Image 1 (tube, rainbow, N blue to C red):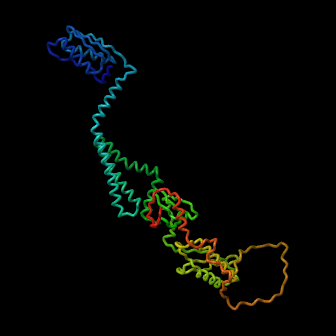
Image 2 (cartoon, rainbow, N blue to C red; image 1 turned 90 degrees about the vertical axis):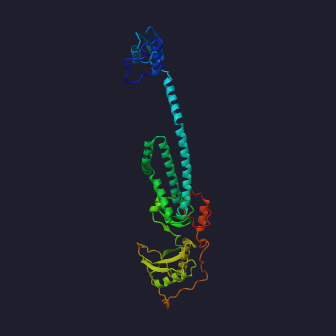
Length: 437
């Protein structure tokens, strides 16, 4: 099938020079070669007899037909031209253009084979060099940074940079310099778009990086953050995992951790606790303070330094409220258990010393009045002086069975954490060499 004639000027040349004494065969051969070379004609056939040229074949448009006639007319030695080329429209099921395009693609692929081989070699070498760079940076940063996340991010960033240089070289070799520059220039824009689209993820990742650098807590520390209290299990690239005191696993986003106030109870194991107890207005405040201080001094879990305090908090409706302060070692004892024990013992000591613990004042109205009868009784003798009451025979133990001892629950919580499934890779330096997680 013939090909389409090119757009533009299709005028035949004014004269086709052969030899002054051109023969019919020479004219036929020359015209046939020209028509076949143009690829505009299907099965072109030229016959020449005594200078008369007869053209046969097919073409797709009138312009090509006229061009062939003018070509033959302007050829030297031609007396007349009989143009019998038939104009045939393009067939619907013509696979010639597809075949020609496929042939062009195959030839182009063969020509690109050397570039493809070189590009593959460069990519492989870049990948190997990137792996080597990542490994070398990870080893080099190991002695300079304690943060595992920072080491990993820096090492991978170096490897990615080497890979980007390799891809840039591949594009340069392939002759796509402009594309290479566009990709390099668009890297920052892509990073900006991704940062906006994944703002929360990026924020948590950066927060984990800063937390791993600053390390405000270590693995196993008891902390209070974002209204949650628990033992730190691990720090991942997205969240901080806590094991709460009731055995539940809690994941707090690192961005929330980084922007919140952190109370680390383990950094200083000594902590102070307090509670309020109310005594009657008729009771001696100094005497009640001495009774409470004696209980604190005798308690094995209460620290002598810093010393405990019993201070007057306020005057209530029916009680004088005392606030009892005491210190304990949070690493050894549970402040919940110690507080329970101290409150129980102070209450029993007040009862033994006949110090009243009145309830809150309540107003009661009697609509019919209250009958009053006067009864004579002997006036009680005033005690010569106030003294601390001696303990009775049923003195309570420091820790009851219900309080299950005064020891800290940290070991139990860590055991619960060890049994639980914890997501993510830990980025914290373990605070205990015996940690099996």
